[in-house]
Image (cartoon, rainbow over all chains, first blue to last red; front, side, top):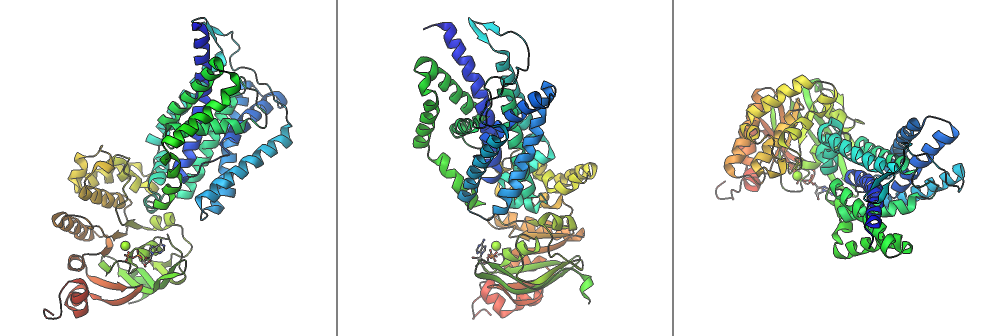
Amino acid sequence: MEWSALVQYVLTGITQGAIYALLAVGFNLVYSATGIINFAQGEFVMLGGMLAVTCYSFLHLPLWLSAILPIGVVMLVGAGIHQLAIRPLRHAHLVTLIMATVGLSVALRGLAKVLWGADSYPLPAFSNVDPVALAGASVDPQSLWVMGVAAVTGTALTLFFRYSLTGRAMTACAARPLAACLAGIRVERMNMWAFALAGGVGAIAGAVLAPIALPSFDVGTSLALKGFCAAILGGIGNNAGALLGGLLVGLLESLGAGYISSGYKDAIAFLVLLIVLVLRPQGLLNVTMRRDES
Amino acid sequence: MTAAHFLLRLQSIRVCYDHLEALKGVSLHLEAGEIVALVGANGAGKTTTLAAICGLLPLRGGEIQFQGRSLAGLRPDQIVQLGITQVPEGRMIFAEMPVVDNLRLGAYLRLRAGQRRAVAEDLERMLDLFPILRERKHVLAGNLSGGEQQMLALGRALMARPRLLILDEPTIGLAPRLASQILHTVAELREQGTTILLVEQNVLASLQIADRGYVLETGRVVLQGLSEELLRNRDVQRAYLGKDYEEV
Ligand SMILES: Nc1ncnc2c1ncn2[C@@H]1O[C@H](COP(=O)(O)OP(=O)(O)O)[C@@H](O)[C@H]1O
Ligand SMILES: [Mg+2]
Protein backbone atom coordinates (compact mmCIF):
# COMPACT_ATOMS: atom_id res chain seq x y z
CA MET A 1 0.00 0.00 0.00
CA GLU A 2 1.33 3.33 -1.03
CA TRP A 3 1.46 6.02 1.62
CA SER A 4 1.01 8.94 -0.77
CA ALA A 5 -2.08 7.35 -2.32
CA LEU A 6 -3.68 6.98 1.11
CA VAL A 7 -2.97 10.64 1.91
CA GLN A 8 -4.52 11.61 -1.41
CA TYR A 9 -7.67 9.57 -0.75
CA VAL A 10 -7.99 11.02 2.74
CA LEU A 11 -7.65 14.58 1.44
CA THR A 12 -10.25 13.97 -1.24
CA GLY A 13 -12.48 12.34 1.35
CA ILE A 14 -12.22 15.28 3.74
CA THR A 15 -12.98 17.73 0.95
CA GLN A 16 -16.05 15.80 -0.19
CA GLY A 17 -16.94 15.25 3.45
CA ALA A 18 -16.92 18.97 4.15
CA ILE A 19 -19.43 19.45 1.32
CA TYR A 20 -21.63 16.63 2.65
CA ALA A 21 -21.40 18.17 6.11
CA LEU A 22 -22.71 21.47 4.72
CA LEU A 23 -25.58 19.58 3.08
CA ALA A 24 -26.31 17.82 6.34
CA VAL A 25 -26.33 21.17 8.16
CA GLY A 26 -28.86 22.37 5.58
CA PHE A 27 -31.07 19.36 6.30
CA ASN A 28 -30.71 19.99 10.04
CA LEU A 29 -31.72 23.64 9.80
CA VAL A 30 -35.06 22.82 8.22
CA TYR A 31 -35.61 19.65 10.22
CA SER A 32 -34.99 21.29 13.61
CA ALA A 33 -37.41 24.09 12.85
CA THR A 34 -40.19 22.20 11.11
CA GLY A 35 -39.62 18.45 11.34
CA ILE A 36 -39.42 18.35 7.54
CA ILE A 37 -36.73 16.55 5.55
CA ASN A 38 -36.21 19.04 2.74
CA PHE A 39 -35.39 17.04 -0.36
CA ALA A 40 -34.77 20.25 -2.30
CA GLN A 41 -31.58 20.81 -0.28
CA GLY A 42 -29.45 19.35 -3.09
CA GLU A 43 -31.04 21.78 -5.54
CA PHE A 44 -29.96 24.68 -3.32
CA VAL A 45 -26.38 23.48 -3.83
CA MET A 46 -26.94 23.08 -7.57
CA LEU A 47 -28.40 26.59 -7.79
CA GLY A 48 -25.45 27.99 -5.83
CA GLY A 49 -23.03 26.48 -8.34
CA MET A 50 -25.01 27.35 -11.46
CA LEU A 51 -25.63 30.92 -10.35
CA ALA A 52 -21.94 31.39 -9.50
CA VAL A 53 -21.01 30.18 -12.97
CA THR A 54 -23.65 32.43 -14.53
CA CYS A 55 -22.43 35.50 -12.63
CA TYR A 56 -18.84 34.81 -13.60
CA SER A 57 -19.00 33.54 -17.18
CA PHE A 58 -22.14 35.23 -18.51
CA LEU A 59 -22.43 38.43 -16.47
CA HIS A 60 -18.64 38.82 -16.21
CA LEU A 61 -18.73 39.74 -12.54
CA PRO A 62 -15.56 39.36 -10.45
CA LEU A 63 -15.03 35.85 -9.07
CA TRP A 64 -15.50 36.82 -5.41
CA LEU A 65 -18.80 38.53 -6.17
CA SER A 66 -19.88 35.58 -8.31
CA ALA A 67 -19.33 33.30 -5.34
CA ILE A 68 -21.13 35.52 -2.82
CA LEU A 69 -24.12 36.79 -4.83
CA PRO A 70 -25.75 33.34 -5.18
CA ILE A 71 -25.90 33.03 -1.38
CA GLY A 72 -28.38 35.88 -1.20
CA VAL A 73 -30.34 34.66 -4.20
CA VAL A 74 -30.68 31.09 -2.93
CA MET A 75 -31.63 32.38 0.52
CA LEU A 76 -34.50 34.16 -1.22
CA VAL A 77 -35.36 30.92 -3.05
CA GLY A 78 -35.42 29.10 0.32
CA ALA A 79 -37.60 31.76 1.93
CA GLY A 80 -39.86 31.79 -1.12
CA ILE A 81 -40.30 28.03 -1.00
CA HIS A 82 -41.37 28.32 2.60
CA GLN A 83 -43.83 31.13 1.98
CA LEU A 84 -45.35 29.75 -1.22
CA ALA A 85 -45.24 25.98 -0.75
CA ILE A 86 -44.62 25.00 2.87
CA ARG A 87 -46.57 27.60 4.84
CA PRO A 88 -49.84 27.14 2.95
CA LEU A 89 -49.56 23.41 3.80
CA ARG A 90 -48.90 23.97 7.50
CA HIS A 91 -51.97 22.04 8.58
CA ALA A 92 -51.12 19.10 6.34
CA HIS A 93 -49.51 15.88 7.51
CA LEU A 94 -45.73 15.93 7.79
CA VAL A 95 -45.42 13.29 5.06
CA THR A 96 -47.33 15.60 2.70
CA LEU A 97 -44.86 18.37 3.44
CA ILE A 98 -41.90 16.10 2.76
CA MET A 99 -43.50 15.00 -0.52
CA ALA A 100 -43.91 18.66 -1.39
CA THR A 101 -40.14 19.14 -1.03
CA VAL A 102 -39.58 16.19 -3.34
CA GLY A 103 -41.83 17.90 -5.87
CA LEU A 104 -39.99 21.18 -5.43
CA SER A 105 -36.70 19.43 -5.98
CA VAL A 106 -37.93 18.02 -9.29
CA ALA A 107 -39.34 21.42 -10.27
CA LEU A 108 -36.11 23.27 -9.50
CA ARG A 109 -34.12 20.71 -11.45
CA GLY A 110 -36.47 21.11 -14.40
CA LEU A 111 -36.24 24.87 -14.23
CA ALA A 112 -32.45 24.66 -14.15
CA LYS A 113 -32.47 22.45 -17.22
CA VAL A 114 -34.64 24.96 -19.07
CA LEU A 115 -32.35 27.83 -18.05
CA TRP A 116 -28.95 26.25 -18.48
CA GLY A 117 -29.48 23.16 -20.59
CA ALA A 118 -27.78 19.87 -19.80
CA ASP A 119 -24.20 21.17 -19.96
CA SER A 120 -21.68 21.43 -17.15
CA TYR A 121 -20.01 24.78 -16.66
CA PRO A 122 -16.53 25.49 -15.31
CA LEU A 123 -15.65 28.00 -12.61
CA PRO A 124 -12.01 28.92 -11.94
CA ALA A 125 -10.45 28.01 -8.61
CA PHE A 126 -10.71 30.74 -5.96
CA SER A 127 -6.95 30.98 -5.58
CA ASN A 128 -4.81 30.86 -8.65
CA VAL A 129 -1.88 28.99 -7.09
CA ASP A 130 -0.21 25.62 -7.66
CA PRO A 131 -1.17 22.56 -5.66
CA VAL A 132 0.73 22.17 -2.40
CA ALA A 133 2.77 19.02 -1.87
CA LEU A 134 1.98 17.09 1.32
CA ALA A 135 3.47 13.71 2.22
CA GLY A 136 3.85 12.76 -1.41
CA ALA A 137 0.31 13.82 -2.28
CA SER A 138 -0.77 17.12 -3.77
CA VAL A 139 -3.32 19.35 -2.07
CA ASP A 140 -5.54 21.24 -4.45
CA PRO A 141 -5.88 24.81 -3.09
CA GLN A 142 -9.60 24.69 -3.78
CA SER A 143 -9.81 21.77 -1.33
CA LEU A 144 -8.42 24.08 1.33
CA TRP A 145 -11.08 26.62 0.36
CA VAL A 146 -13.77 23.96 0.76
CA MET A 147 -12.53 22.94 4.20
CA GLY A 148 -12.03 26.52 5.34
CA VAL A 149 -15.41 27.72 4.09
CA ALA A 150 -17.17 24.75 5.72
CA ALA A 151 -15.42 25.45 9.02
CA VAL A 152 -16.25 29.16 8.93
CA THR A 153 -19.87 28.48 7.97
CA GLY A 154 -20.30 25.95 10.76
CA THR A 155 -18.75 28.27 13.33
CA ALA A 156 -20.79 31.25 12.19
CA LEU A 157 -24.03 29.27 12.44
CA THR A 158 -23.13 28.01 15.89
CA LEU A 159 -22.46 31.55 17.10
CA PHE A 160 -25.63 32.81 15.44
CA PHE A 161 -27.81 30.24 17.18
CA ARG A 162 -26.11 30.68 20.53
CA TYR A 163 -25.78 34.44 20.81
CA SER A 164 -28.07 36.35 18.47
CA LEU A 165 -31.65 37.16 19.43
CA THR A 166 -33.00 35.74 16.18
CA GLY A 167 -30.86 32.62 16.58
CA ARG A 168 -32.09 32.08 20.12
CA ALA A 169 -35.67 32.67 19.00
CA MET A 170 -35.25 30.10 16.22
CA THR A 171 -33.85 27.61 18.71
CA ALA A 172 -36.78 28.30 21.04
CA CYS A 173 -39.28 27.77 18.21
CA ALA A 174 -37.68 24.49 17.23
CA ALA A 175 -37.79 23.17 20.80
CA ARG A 176 -41.08 24.62 22.08
CA PRO A 177 -43.15 26.24 19.35
CA LEU A 178 -46.09 26.92 21.63
CA ALA A 179 -44.04 28.56 24.37
CA ALA A 180 -42.11 30.56 21.77
CA CYS A 181 -45.38 31.74 20.26
CA LEU A 182 -46.62 32.84 23.70
CA ALA A 183 -43.41 34.84 24.13
CA GLY A 184 -44.34 36.81 21.02
CA ILE A 185 -42.02 35.01 18.61
CA ARG A 186 -43.53 34.48 15.16
CA VAL A 187 -42.97 30.79 14.60
CA GLU A 188 -43.80 30.92 10.88
CA ARG A 189 -41.33 33.75 10.44
CA MET A 190 -38.59 31.75 12.14
CA ASN A 191 -39.39 28.74 9.96
CA MET A 192 -39.00 30.97 6.93
CA TRP A 193 -35.57 31.96 8.23
CA ALA A 194 -34.67 28.30 8.65
CA PHE A 195 -35.45 27.69 4.98
CA ALA A 196 -33.54 30.84 4.00
CA LEU A 197 -30.48 29.78 5.98
CA ALA A 198 -30.68 26.29 4.48
CA GLY A 199 -30.69 27.93 1.05
CA GLY A 200 -27.71 30.08 2.01
CA VAL A 201 -25.69 27.16 3.32
CA GLY A 202 -26.55 25.19 0.18
CA ALA A 203 -25.40 28.04 -2.07
CA ILE A 204 -22.14 28.35 -0.15
CA ALA A 205 -21.47 24.65 -0.71
CA GLY A 206 -22.41 24.94 -4.37
CA ALA A 207 -20.15 27.90 -5.10
CA VAL A 208 -17.10 26.54 -3.31
CA LEU A 209 -17.56 23.11 -4.88
CA ALA A 210 -18.02 24.40 -8.44
CA PRO A 211 -14.29 24.70 -9.33
CA ILE A 212 -13.77 21.06 -8.26
CA ALA A 213 -16.91 19.42 -9.63
CA LEU A 214 -18.40 21.30 -12.55
CA PRO A 215 -22.03 22.05 -11.79
CA SER A 216 -24.87 20.99 -14.06
CA PHE A 217 -28.64 21.00 -13.53
CA ASP A 218 -28.68 17.51 -12.05
CA VAL A 219 -25.87 17.53 -9.46
CA GLY A 220 -28.32 18.08 -6.61
CA THR A 221 -29.78 14.61 -6.39
CA SER A 222 -26.74 12.59 -5.48
CA LEU A 223 -25.38 15.39 -3.26
CA ALA A 224 -28.66 15.47 -1.36
CA LEU A 225 -28.62 11.72 -0.85
CA LYS A 226 -25.05 11.81 0.46
CA GLY A 227 -25.83 14.79 2.66
CA PHE A 228 -28.92 13.01 3.92
CA CYS A 229 -26.80 9.94 4.75
CA ALA A 230 -24.43 12.23 6.63
CA ALA A 231 -27.27 13.88 8.56
CA ILE A 232 -28.82 10.56 9.54
CA LEU A 233 -25.45 9.08 10.38
CA GLY A 234 -24.60 11.95 12.69
CA GLY A 235 -28.06 12.16 14.19
CA ILE A 236 -30.50 14.40 12.41
CA GLY A 237 -30.82 17.87 13.93
CA ASN A 238 -27.34 17.75 15.43
CA ASN A 239 -24.76 19.95 13.69
CA ALA A 240 -21.72 18.38 15.33
CA GLY A 241 -23.16 15.10 14.07
CA ALA A 242 -23.46 16.62 10.61
CA LEU A 243 -19.74 17.32 10.54
CA LEU A 244 -18.92 13.83 11.78
CA GLY A 245 -21.38 12.17 9.41
CA GLY A 246 -20.20 14.26 6.47
CA LEU A 247 -16.56 13.40 7.00
CA LEU A 248 -17.40 9.74 7.51
CA VAL A 249 -19.38 9.50 4.27
CA GLY A 250 -16.73 11.47 2.37
CA LEU A 251 -13.87 9.34 3.66
CA LEU A 252 -15.65 6.00 3.14
CA GLU A 253 -16.55 7.03 -0.37
CA SER A 254 -13.06 8.18 -1.27
CA LEU A 255 -11.29 5.22 0.34
CA GLY A 256 -13.80 2.81 -1.20
CA ALA A 257 -13.24 4.29 -4.64
CA GLY A 258 -9.48 4.13 -4.18
CA TYR A 259 -9.09 0.69 -2.70
CA ILE A 260 -12.12 -1.22 -3.91
CA SER A 261 -13.48 0.26 -7.11
CA SER A 262 -14.66 3.66 -8.16
CA GLY A 263 -17.76 1.91 -9.47
CA TYR A 264 -18.84 1.35 -5.85
CA LYS A 265 -18.24 4.95 -4.85
CA ASP A 266 -21.90 5.89 -4.59
CA ALA A 267 -23.01 2.51 -3.32
CA ILE A 268 -20.88 2.89 -0.23
CA ALA A 269 -22.74 5.92 1.11
CA PHE A 270 -26.05 4.17 0.59
CA LEU A 271 -24.77 0.99 2.20
CA VAL A 272 -23.80 3.06 5.23
CA LEU A 273 -27.27 4.60 5.27
CA LEU A 274 -28.87 1.15 5.11
CA ILE A 275 -26.75 -0.14 7.95
CA VAL A 276 -27.55 2.89 10.09
CA LEU A 277 -31.26 2.61 9.39
CA VAL A 278 -31.24 -1.07 10.29
CA LEU A 279 -29.29 -0.54 13.49
CA ARG A 280 -30.93 2.72 14.52
CA PRO A 281 -34.38 2.93 12.94
CA GLN A 282 -35.45 5.41 15.61
CA GLY A 283 -33.45 7.97 13.68
CA LEU A 284 -36.07 7.95 10.96
CA LEU A 285 -39.10 7.36 13.16
CA ASN A 286 -38.26 10.56 14.99
CA VAL A 287 -39.41 12.42 11.92
CA THR A 288 -43.03 11.50 12.48
CA MET A 289 -42.92 11.48 16.25
CA ARG A 290 -41.61 14.99 16.53
CA ARG A 291 -44.68 16.80 15.18
CA ASP A 292 -47.14 14.84 17.26
CA GLU A 293 -45.67 15.97 20.52
CA SER A 294 -45.74 19.66 19.64
CA MET B 1 -70.16 49.59 34.74
CA THR B 2 -69.53 49.99 31.02
CA ALA B 3 -67.54 47.68 28.81
CA ALA B 4 -64.65 50.13 28.65
CA HIS B 5 -63.89 49.49 32.31
CA PHE B 6 -63.05 45.86 31.70
CA LEU B 7 -59.45 44.97 31.05
CA LEU B 8 -60.48 41.71 29.40
CA ARG B 9 -63.93 40.69 28.28
CA LEU B 10 -65.05 37.44 26.68
CA GLN B 11 -68.55 37.56 25.22
CA SER B 12 -70.09 34.14 24.60
CA ILE B 13 -67.08 32.78 22.76
CA ARG B 14 -67.34 29.46 20.98
CA VAL B 15 -64.34 27.34 19.99
CA CYS B 16 -64.31 24.03 18.14
CA TYR B 17 -61.74 21.31 17.61
CA ASP B 18 -62.81 19.70 14.35
CA HIS B 19 -66.29 18.53 15.30
CA LEU B 20 -66.00 18.88 19.06
CA GLU B 21 -67.37 22.14 20.41
CA ALA B 22 -65.02 22.74 23.34
CA LEU B 23 -66.41 26.15 24.33
CA LYS B 24 -70.15 26.67 23.98
CA GLY B 25 -70.48 30.37 24.63
CA VAL B 26 -68.17 31.37 27.47
CA SER B 27 -68.47 34.86 28.90
CA LEU B 28 -66.20 36.29 31.54
CA HIS B 29 -64.42 39.51 32.36
CA LEU B 30 -61.57 40.90 34.40
CA GLU B 31 -61.18 44.38 35.81
CA ALA B 32 -57.74 45.90 36.12
CA GLY B 33 -56.01 44.82 39.32
CA GLU B 34 -58.13 41.73 39.94
CA ILE B 35 -57.14 38.14 40.41
CA VAL B 36 -59.80 36.01 38.79
CA ALA B 37 -59.79 32.23 39.12
CA LEU B 38 -61.09 29.98 36.37
CA VAL B 39 -61.73 26.54 37.79
CA GLY B 40 -63.25 23.33 36.58
CA ALA B 41 -62.64 19.64 36.09
CA ASN B 42 -60.20 18.18 33.60
CA GLY B 43 -61.46 18.70 30.06
CA ALA B 44 -63.86 21.51 31.04
CA GLY B 45 -62.27 23.88 28.54
CA LYS B 46 -60.00 26.01 30.71
CA THR B 47 -56.87 25.65 28.57
CA THR B 48 -58.97 26.14 25.43
CA THR B 49 -60.30 29.42 26.85
CA LEU B 50 -56.77 30.64 27.49
CA ALA B 51 -55.62 29.55 24.02
CA ALA B 52 -58.48 31.52 22.48
CA ILE B 53 -57.54 34.64 24.46
CA CYS B 54 -53.94 34.40 23.26
CA GLY B 55 -54.96 34.04 19.62
CA LEU B 56 -53.89 30.42 19.28
CA LEU B 57 -57.35 29.18 18.27
CA PRO B 58 -59.92 30.85 16.03
CA LEU B 59 -63.32 31.79 17.45
CA ARG B 60 -66.44 30.23 15.94
CA GLY B 61 -68.53 32.89 17.58
CA GLY B 62 -68.47 35.62 20.18
CA GLU B 63 -65.82 38.22 20.80
CA ILE B 64 -62.80 38.88 22.98
CA GLN B 65 -61.95 42.45 23.93
CA PHE B 66 -58.86 43.73 25.67
CA GLN B 67 -59.01 47.30 26.96
CA GLY B 68 -62.16 47.78 24.94
CA ARG B 69 -60.55 46.68 21.71
CA SER B 70 -61.46 43.50 19.83
CA LEU B 71 -58.69 40.94 19.49
CA ALA B 72 -60.28 39.47 16.36
CA GLY B 73 -57.77 38.86 13.59
CA LEU B 74 -54.72 39.59 15.72
CA ARG B 75 -51.74 37.22 15.65
CA PRO B 76 -50.45 35.78 18.94
CA ASP B 77 -47.40 38.05 18.88
CA GLN B 78 -49.62 41.11 18.44
CA ILE B 79 -51.65 40.02 21.44
CA VAL B 80 -48.47 39.66 23.50
CA GLN B 81 -47.52 43.13 22.31
CA LEU B 82 -50.81 44.49 23.70
CA GLY B 83 -49.88 43.19 27.14
CA ILE B 84 -51.30 39.68 27.52
CA THR B 85 -48.82 36.97 28.48
CA GLN B 86 -49.55 33.37 29.31
CA VAL B 87 -47.61 30.84 31.32
CA PRO B 88 -48.68 27.68 29.51
CA GLU B 89 -49.81 24.45 31.07
CA GLY B 90 -46.79 22.23 31.78
CA ARG B 91 -44.37 25.18 32.02
CA MET B 92 -42.78 24.61 28.63
CA ILE B 93 -39.45 26.12 29.51
CA PHE B 94 -36.69 26.02 26.88
CA ALA B 95 -34.90 23.06 28.42
CA GLU B 96 -31.73 23.22 26.36
CA MET B 97 -31.06 26.87 27.13
CA PRO B 98 -29.63 28.41 30.26
CA VAL B 99 -31.95 30.10 32.72
CA VAL B 100 -30.94 33.64 31.62
CA ASP B 101 -31.70 32.91 27.97
CA ASN B 102 -35.14 31.66 28.94
CA LEU B 103 -35.79 34.90 30.80
CA ARG B 104 -34.45 37.07 28.00
CA LEU B 105 -36.65 35.33 25.43
CA GLY B 106 -39.64 36.26 27.58
CA ALA B 107 -38.76 39.84 26.65
CA TYR B 108 -38.33 38.96 22.97
CA LEU B 109 -40.60 41.68 21.61
CA ARG B 110 -39.08 44.31 23.89
CA LEU B 111 -35.58 43.31 22.77
CA ARG B 112 -36.77 43.51 19.17
CA ALA B 113 -38.02 47.00 19.95
CA GLY B 114 -34.53 47.93 21.18
CA GLN B 115 -35.27 48.12 24.91
CA ARG B 116 -32.03 46.42 25.87
CA ARG B 117 -31.30 48.49 28.96
CA ALA B 118 -34.80 48.14 30.42
CA VAL B 119 -34.74 44.39 29.75
CA ALA B 120 -31.38 44.04 31.49
CA GLU B 121 -32.80 45.86 34.53
CA ASP B 122 -35.88 43.66 34.56
CA LEU B 123 -33.67 40.60 34.34
CA GLU B 124 -31.93 41.68 37.54
CA ARG B 125 -35.27 42.34 39.18
CA MET B 126 -36.48 38.90 38.19
CA LEU B 127 -33.39 37.30 39.67
CA ASP B 128 -34.09 39.24 42.88
CA LEU B 129 -37.68 38.05 42.88
CA PHE B 130 -36.57 34.44 42.43
CA PRO B 131 -33.19 34.14 44.21
CA ILE B 132 -33.01 30.46 43.39
CA LEU B 133 -32.88 31.40 39.71
CA ARG B 134 -29.98 33.78 40.34
CA GLU B 135 -28.01 30.94 41.86
CA ARG B 136 -28.73 28.80 38.83
CA LYS B 137 -28.55 31.53 36.23
CA HIS B 138 -26.25 29.67 33.84
CA VAL B 139 -27.67 26.19 34.42
CA LEU B 140 -29.61 24.63 31.54
CA ALA B 141 -33.29 25.06 32.35
CA GLY B 142 -33.97 21.36 31.82
CA ASN B 143 -31.79 20.59 34.83
CA LEU B 144 -33.95 22.65 37.22
CA SER B 145 -36.40 21.01 39.61
CA GLY B 146 -40.12 21.21 38.91
CA GLY B 147 -40.63 24.12 41.29
CA GLU B 148 -37.68 26.02 39.87
CA GLN B 149 -38.99 25.44 36.35
CA GLN B 150 -42.36 26.87 37.35
CA MET B 151 -40.65 29.94 38.77
CA LEU B 152 -38.65 30.25 35.58
CA ALA B 153 -41.81 30.00 33.46
CA LEU B 154 -43.39 32.70 35.64
CA GLY B 155 -40.27 34.87 35.43
CA ARG B 156 -40.10 34.43 31.67
CA ALA B 157 -43.70 35.60 31.31
CA LEU B 158 -43.10 38.60 33.60
CA MET B 159 -40.14 39.68 31.45
CA ALA B 160 -42.74 40.75 28.87
CA ARG B 161 -44.12 43.23 31.45
CA PRO B 162 -47.68 42.02 30.91
CA ARG B 163 -50.74 43.99 31.92
CA LEU B 164 -52.64 40.73 32.11
CA LEU B 165 -50.83 37.61 33.27
CA ILE B 166 -52.51 34.31 32.51
CA LEU B 167 -51.46 31.23 34.46
CA ASP B 168 -52.50 27.73 33.42
CA GLU B 169 -52.26 25.37 36.38
CA PRO B 170 -49.05 26.82 37.81
CA THR B 171 -48.98 24.55 40.85
CA ILE B 172 -49.70 21.23 39.20
CA GLY B 173 -47.26 18.53 40.24
CA LEU B 174 -45.63 20.68 42.91
CA ALA B 175 -45.23 19.84 46.58
CA PRO B 176 -47.76 21.75 48.74
CA ARG B 177 -45.12 24.07 50.17
CA LEU B 178 -43.86 25.03 46.70
CA ALA B 179 -47.40 25.39 45.42
CA SER B 180 -48.31 27.87 48.13
CA GLN B 181 -45.07 29.72 47.51
CA ILE B 182 -46.02 30.14 43.85
CA LEU B 183 -49.53 31.32 44.73
CA HIS B 184 -48.04 33.71 47.28
CA THR B 185 -45.85 35.20 44.54
CA VAL B 186 -48.93 35.52 42.33
CA ALA B 187 -50.74 37.44 45.07
CA GLU B 188 -47.71 39.72 45.42
CA LEU B 189 -47.66 40.41 41.68
CA ARG B 190 -51.20 41.70 41.93
CA GLU B 191 -50.11 44.06 44.72
CA GLN B 192 -47.65 45.47 42.18
CA GLY B 193 -50.47 46.11 39.72
CA THR B 194 -50.58 43.06 37.45
CA THR B 195 -54.02 41.69 36.65
CA ILE B 196 -54.14 37.91 36.84
CA LEU B 197 -56.29 35.19 35.32
CA LEU B 198 -55.53 32.02 37.22
CA VAL B 199 -56.53 28.56 36.07
CA GLU B 200 -56.19 25.98 38.80
CA GLN B 201 -57.05 22.42 39.67
CA ASN B 202 -56.60 23.39 43.28
CA VAL B 203 -59.92 25.17 43.67
CA LEU B 204 -59.59 25.96 47.37
CA ALA B 205 -56.12 27.49 47.12
CA SER B 206 -56.92 29.51 44.02
CA LEU B 207 -60.20 30.90 45.34
CA GLN B 208 -58.37 31.87 48.53
CA ILE B 209 -56.13 34.29 46.64
CA ALA B 210 -58.64 35.29 43.94
CA ASP B 211 -61.19 38.11 44.17
CA ARG B 212 -63.70 36.38 41.96
CA GLY B 213 -64.06 33.08 40.22
CA TYR B 214 -65.76 31.30 37.36
CA VAL B 215 -66.60 27.62 37.32
CA LEU B 216 -66.39 26.00 33.91
CA GLU B 217 -68.13 22.73 33.07
CA THR B 218 -68.00 21.09 29.63
CA GLY B 219 -67.47 24.35 27.82
CA ARG B 220 -69.92 26.50 29.78
CA VAL B 221 -69.65 28.82 32.76
CA VAL B 222 -71.97 27.21 35.29
CA LEU B 223 -71.20 29.40 38.29
CA GLN B 224 -69.56 32.73 38.94
CA GLY B 225 -69.17 35.10 41.80
CA LEU B 226 -66.97 36.44 44.54
CA SER B 227 -64.48 33.93 45.83
CA GLU B 228 -66.04 33.72 49.30
CA GLU B 229 -69.47 33.09 47.77
CA LEU B 230 -68.10 30.31 45.63
CA LEU B 231 -66.26 28.78 48.57
CA ARG B 232 -69.58 28.71 50.47
CA ASN B 233 -71.52 27.31 47.53
CA ARG B 234 -72.77 23.77 48.12
CA ASP B 235 -72.19 22.56 44.57
CA VAL B 236 -68.66 23.89 44.58
CA GLN B 237 -67.96 22.30 47.91
CA ARG B 238 -69.32 18.97 46.77
CA ALA B 239 -67.73 18.89 43.34
CA TYR B 240 -64.41 20.56 43.90
CA LEU B 241 -63.64 20.74 47.60
CA GLY B 242 -64.26 17.07 48.30
CA LYS B 243 -66.93 17.64 50.93
CA ASP B 244 -69.81 15.19 50.84
CA TYR B 245 -73.47 15.80 51.62
CA GLU B 246 -73.27 15.25 55.37
CA GLU B 247 -70.53 17.80 55.87
CA VAL B 248 -72.38 20.30 53.75
N1 LIG C 1 -55.94 19.82 20.44
C1 LIG C 1 -57.15 19.30 20.70
N2 LIG C 1 -57.81 18.61 19.75
C2 LIG C 1 -59.03 18.09 19.99
N3 LIG C 1 -59.68 18.21 21.16
C3 LIG C 1 -59.08 18.89 22.16
C4 LIG C 1 -57.78 19.46 21.98
N4 LIG C 1 -57.43 20.08 23.13
C5 LIG C 1 -58.46 19.90 23.98
N5 LIG C 1 -59.45 19.18 23.41
C6 LIG C 1 -60.72 18.83 24.02
O1 LIG C 1 -61.38 20.02 24.39
C7 LIG C 1 -61.97 19.90 25.67
C8 LIG C 1 -61.42 20.97 26.60
O2 LIG C 1 -60.05 20.71 26.83
P1 LIG C 1 -59.14 21.67 27.69
O3 LIG C 1 -59.41 23.07 27.30
O4 LIG C 1 -57.74 21.20 27.56
O5 LIG C 1 -59.66 21.42 29.16
P2 LIG C 1 -59.02 21.78 30.58
O6 LIG C 1 -57.87 22.70 30.35
O7 LIG C 1 -60.14 22.41 31.32
O8 LIG C 1 -58.61 20.49 31.21
C9 LIG C 1 -61.70 18.47 26.14
O9 LIG C 1 -62.81 17.70 25.82
C10 LIG C 1 -60.52 18.06 25.30
O10 LIG C 1 -60.54 16.66 25.08
MG1 LIG D 1 -55.89 22.40 30.93
